[in-house]
Length: 348
Image (cartoon, rainbow, N blue to C red; front, side, top):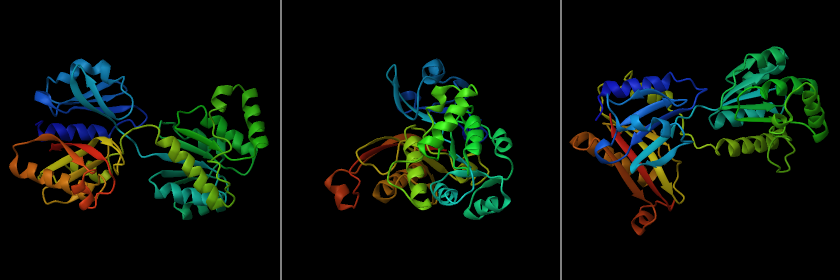
């Protein structure tokens, strides 16, 4: 097992990572090199376990991997985790449609920033729960927004002049999604204006307009549901891992529970209708408490049991455990998902 100080250094780097870069942790899952890791940021080696890891020789291969999942390199089974970030939504406009979008986005884990040039409407956005409200001219406010691969732009201003300001800025930034409200005629006018100003037409055609999935939405609340459904659809196409939570990183970096034994568990594969995605993490402490969840129920209970055994016996520092939720025993125990998961478990 790597020294605890080594793992703390890794998670400090993850905590301090540039969230605009592609950050990947690669871990060997079996054999004599089990537990060896490297951490890459935009393909550049930022950290490696020990002074000589077998993964060092495969750096070029690893940086080509996309998303989170299992890879096989020259017979070596490796789990590549593309570290996710908390998704951020920038809502341009603080009108009546924005309010339910703010509330829904917050409820599923987005950090929400609202741009609104009218003080009264900016106050409404704050009341609705936005994390940040920038009350100034749209063009100036957009200049202060840094594009990243995890940012979602929702353009719902009160007029096509402001739509054009926001869209012109958004398409020139790195982003995960841009959606703009408006009739086809209004959207067409804005796109034509920006194309005449030199914005590439192919970038404009990537914009989701009319915004939201076509579900016949009419009320602001229904429109918000259609918008968030489309954003969830786009977000989940990229298989990055869930973000390391603040509480989890406080423990992994040693700021909390520094003297406590712990096991970090990560879902590395799934088949069937398993409850959580690949890359989902749970930290198990020696008193049986947990941070995060890999789906609850008997499957999670079994992983907690195995984690506690690892901490008590200390004869197994890393392992891959399989939980089958398809057999009769699983059915009798109430495991109704009907799938299987593999979980990598590492004592820290």
